[in-house]
Image 1 (spheres, rainbow, N blue to C red):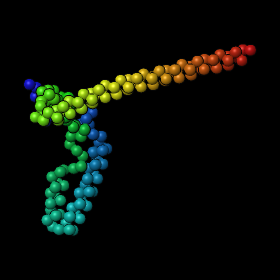
Image 2 (image 1 turned 45 degrees about the vertical axis):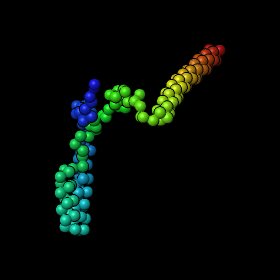
Image 3 (image 1 turned 45 degrees about the horizontal axis):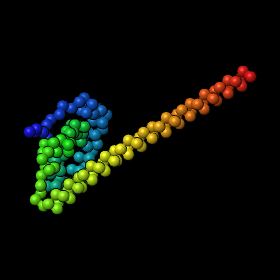
Image 4 (image 1 turned 90 degrees about the vertical axis):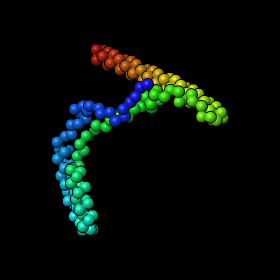
Length: 154
């Protein structure tokens, strides 16, 4: 049986972790202004509230996130379903529900297949239409060029 570690650490690429310096500086300055104002307003409301806000903002350390763009990917539904293939055929104990579920799954699979076929035909028709338009424009351009050339020489 295959196991998947959902919390597995993926090595971030350079592109995922590089935050522009301007963004870092700007976010730090804006967070500083926000932090100072938040602490002033919290102290104005109550001493305990001000202390709590100051501690939370100080503990947070800044506005720029530390792992910018480094979000681990969750396993796909197909991966999860492959871990328990018998679940699709497992009986719920209710014959009516099992028949309904089977019919519904078969209907959905048919609809998905017919929709994918429709999309394929639609793409083919669109490609053919665009190609025909291209050929028509090319033929028009060639005939116009030929007429212009004949008029210059004639």
